Image (cartoon, rainbow, N blue to C red; front, side, top):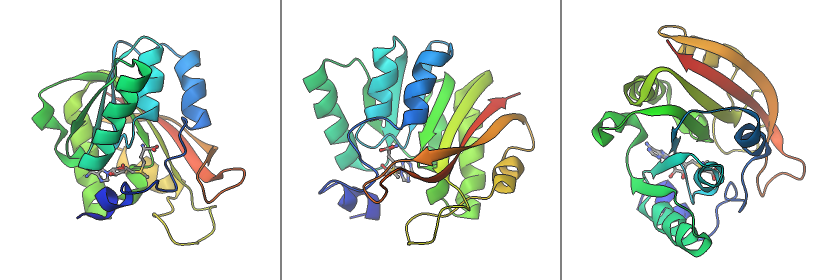
Length: 192
Ligand SMILES: C[S@@+](CC[C@H](N)C(=O)[O-])C[C@H]1O[C@@H](n2cnc3c(N)ncnc32)[C@H](O)[C@@H]1O
């Protein structure tokens, strides 16, 4: 069983049962078009948040257990968010296009090579002028293990061609490991 699928046998530290504050704010502060993909959606809190704001939302995750839990939550809450098992590195296989991609905690799990493939994969599913909103741990977060810490320059470099980086802002990433949230970056990037 993969690391992530096994993590969902219990409640992993990132699965806090509510959306990250930056995404909760985003859902009420910007017009995000019609269709949103939540990449690495876990048990679906963000997908259900945006669905409740009226967007058509697809949550994708490579961990079948996460998708199973997300579907159960969506049915219990009457959410219209949809969930499928899919690889973030091969999103073209969905044969769908989206106005916005959101990513809470996925970008920072990838190796350099996977990161490159991921950026290409995001490009495949975003419409021109589509936006990517991403929350990841920053280099300011102490090393207690866990996923990679990301420097601002790495985000700028990853999206240097065919994208416009609108902002990379300091933010908080809440988890069971953190009282007041871990140090993070919240980025908005537009596909040109
Ligand atoms: C840190 S968790 C965040 C989950 C969720 N976004 C949240 O905020 O609770 C990262 C998620 O990415 C998923 N993941 C890891 N590699 C993936 C891949 N190649 N394709 C799709 N999902 C992946 C994991 O299964 C896990 O659910």
